[in-house]
Length: 94
Ligand SMILES: Nc1ncnc2c1ncn2[C@@H]1O[C@H](COP(=O)(O)OP(=O)(O)OP(=O)(O)O)[C@@H](O)[C@H]1O
Ligand SMILES: [Mg+2]
Image (cartoon, rainbow, N blue to C red; front, side, top):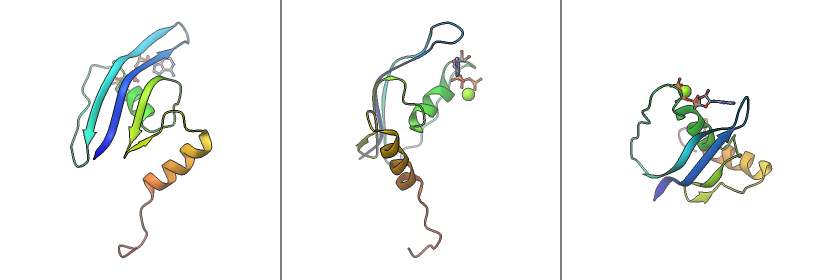
């Protein structure tokens, strides 16, 4: 099972000038795998994590999380997806 699968991610910022921050990024993270993202300041680590949070949908490429392709989902569908993903039971028995 892949926890995260990202394929051919390209991300641009346009303000103050056009700037490509993520260039054709692809990788998979398997369930249970521990991953570090390392890079110098300004290399795009936070930008990538923000895309993985599903809060930023302005990118090219594909992102799947726990087998769900999140790329292309509506804002409502993404909100439901985040609720399910982040749900933690208040009781350990639930
Ligand atoms: N909202 C934005 N609009 C325009 N440019 C941005 C925006 N957010 C980030 N950037 C630019 O994108 C590049 C990557 O920024 P990002 O914050 O992802 O880097 P980082 O690897 O997390 O850096 P740090 O190690 O300092 O946290 C930087 O050049 C930054 O100035
Ligand atoms: Mg950062």
